[in-house]
Image (cartoon, rainbow, N blue to C red; front, side, top):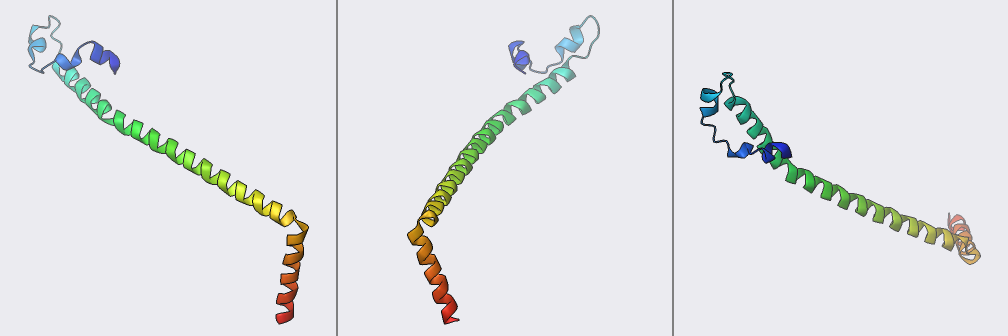
Length: 101
């Protein structure tokens, strides 16, 4: 697409003179118009693609932070359960609950 811009495709005003003066009688206006439309569509889609990339990068970072937070919370729970005092407290609560039932 950059080559089309470098060749000055946007300078074409679609007047049809090139069709008239072409010694090979080529119809040049219609391909130029099609190329300009494609270039315009590509130019319109580029900002949306960049926005989508930024949104995706933000989502990936957010999900990574969420996983890290969940992992840290799980490690903290494992460390708490690993403490024998907390295991005794859990066992006592379970016994109390069984006795009440």
